[in-house]
Each structure stands twice: as C-alpha cells, then as structure tokens.
Length: 405
Ligand code: C5P
Image (cartoon, rainbow, N blue to C red):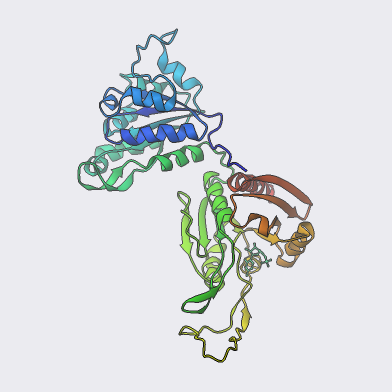
C-alpha cells in the first residue's frame, strides 16, 4: 500500500525573500511537489541574489513570478490572480525586512502585495523567519512578529542552532521537511482545537536482568501517527512511549519510559488533566517478578532458570476508573474474532471506544485496517496508511466529544 500524498490537490504559493536560507527553499519546493502539491514560486529581487528563478522553475515545474508588472497576466494583476487559487501562502525564507513590511501592510513589490491581497479568510499565511539571532531578538522584529501573528499569520520556527554568519542561536529557518510537515498540518481541519490528548505508544520493556528483558513487536507507528493527527487537528498532545526510535511528531510533548509500571506512573497523574486518552501501547501483561541485579549466567547444570511472572497494572482500565476520566480509547490487537474480542474489551475495561486490529497484520507496518467498536455498534475503517487511519480516528473521537453533554 502506498502512503497517501499529503498535499494532493493543494496549490501552494511559495514566496522567497532575501536570505541564505533560500537554498532550503529550493529543497522545500521539491518536497511540496513530491507531496502532491502544485507550487507557484514568487521571488523578491533580494531572493534572486541567493538562488535563481531558473532553479526554482525547474523544481516547481512552473515559471517563477518576480515582478508585479509581469505581462504574462492578461489583466496585469499578478498580485490578485496568484492567490485566488492558493490553499496556502508560504513565505520561506522570510527576512526581517519582509516581516516588517507584512507587519505594516507595505506592498511595494509583488510578494508583499500579494500577501496583502490574499483572501485572508481562506488562504492561510505561513511565515518561516530566517535571520541572524540578533536581528531575530531585536525588539523591532519581535514587535513585528507579534503583530503579524495578531493579524492571523502563522509563524513557523525559527529554530535554534548554527547560523551561516558563524554565530549560533535562534533565527535559523526550519528544515524543508519540517516546513513541509507544517504546511500539511496547517491545512488539516481543527476539530480538536483547545482539547488535550494523551497517547501511549510502542512496546514496553520488562527487564529480567541488566542485559535481558521481555518486550514485543509493537513499532509505535500507530500511536505516533495518532499523536501527529491529534496535534494537526488542533490538540495539545502528550505522547508517553516505550522503547522505540521513531522521530517525535512536531509540537508533541514526548515522555520516554521503559516498563509498564513506569508508563502507568507517568500516565496516571497526567490523565485527569486531559480530554482524551488513547492507549495504543502494547503494554506487557506480565513482568518478571524479580529483577536480577547481575546478568544471569549459565552454571553448567543445563537446567534453564525459571522466570516467575507478576501481573502488570492495566493502565487503560486504571484511567477509565478515575473519578472524572478523559474520553478513553483502547486498542485491541487480536489474531482472530476481532469484533467479539474488541467488544469484550470494551466492557471489561469500561471504555467508550475500542479500536480493533489484527496484530500480526499490522505490527511494524505502515498500513492497517481498523474496526471501531462502541456501545452503538461497529464500523470498519478500510485499509490505509496509519496517518490516514489516525486522522479518521481523530474525526471519530472529535465527533464523540462534541456529542458529549
Ligand atoms: O488487555 P489488553 O492488552 O488486551 O488491552 C489492550 C488495550 O489496553 C490497549 O489499548 C492497551 O494500550 C491497553 N493496556 C494498558 N495497560 C495494560 C494492558 C493493556 O493500558 N497493562
């Protein structure tokens, strides 16, 4: 199964202003196109000092606009025409000077003119600052940033790190892949705006001795996709994860744990302050009853050591038992009889929604198929990549939250 193109049928106007980070804008143009978007590049005169329109045309597959007086437009109104079909207007890099122009509504060349002329209600303006750290920290820049935010612009970054000038600090433009993710996120619906979502993901690791343990094949991918989808839907997201090495979705707070008991001890105090709890983690049901401080050695007797097991706390059931529980969603990874097993789990754990899936068919993979089971019935969500499924599940959760008294 191929992963859905994240920007299919989207049209992005990508504006470049003067700055070394223009080289990253070339990569961004490519990333946006690879994600399925059509990209119209607009460059200021200063931007053309850093990369050429030829490069940007080749990467975007469209002639670049650099002048308000471009005679290719029949009505000679490039500043109007270019934004009318746009789903988003992305300024990357945005120089300090250009941000100052945006803050004041100045519009003496094509790019600033089209920012002002865009349909403000349906074409979001995403601004990725790139400048020296002193310029970024200057009160004038900070004032201008606050002003463009108040006017509805979304400011992406900047990041902290090494700068082309040799200094280090805030002001680096985000990387192209990060910006591409930000564009994808900005275009998602926001049914979880103002909500707080807690997610568990991955396997747990139950130590036997300092070098061995009991774990399972959960990759964490579904939980990470859910955290990303919930964040994109406007929620504030905390992700509590067992040992996995997946990158943290943007703007998601991550807490790493190893064992089921550690996961329990992190989740329980947090849960009551959340609107939603989604337990995707494959929590080990049992742990070794005792932990050997030193590696257990073969003693030549050829008799294997017996490992006694103790039951782990059920995190989901414990959260569902809280006096004011968040809306709880459990996962059921089964090998057979999905509907019956999922419904049994719904009742046993006393949660309003269980998401069933066939464990061996999904562990480690990028796709899955889900069966949503609640008190009213069942709904099959057909096979798709995990991010698509996560967005669907987020829609289902948001609808149930809305319907709550
Ligand atoms: O009981 P079982 O492991 O089959 O239930 C799976 C669901 O319960 C998943 O949502 C899983 O994250 C959650 N769970 C948990 N704590 C456990 C065991 C499972 O939160 N100890």
